[in-house]
Image (cartoon, rainbow, N blue to C red; front, side):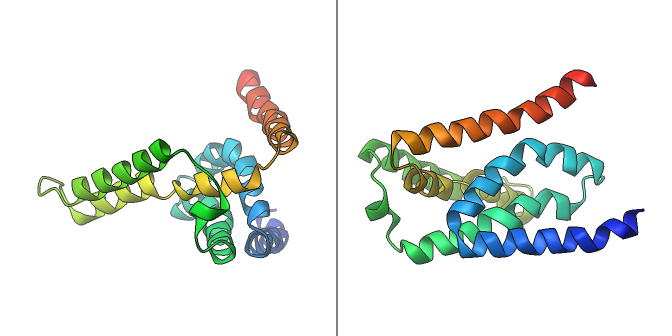
Length: 158
């Protein structure tokens, strides 16, 4: 049974990856739709490293590549309040400084901390660029509300 699913799964993964590489909005939307199910997928796979990194490899990294290739200066593509940008810069400096702290047990712990804290900061720029009008925001929130019903139902039934 499991071997029958490998072929279609590989095709689906390839389509999702290529879709994220072609259009950063697809990668953002795919990431937001996948996230409510990421925990379940990770648990069902036995906490495999591949399942834990699937959202990054399939959605986030391709979306980042295409977005920052399209908008090499993201500050010009979206407008954030200066205080928000200053807070992001301060957070980045703090995380990098703490990673260099000599009391960190080992290098891998520092790298995981950097990934957890800093890897998703560019999503602010991508999301802000994707939401240009009130209709864009309403559409995105509707999609998220509809998708949230599935894990909510699953959680309540178990």
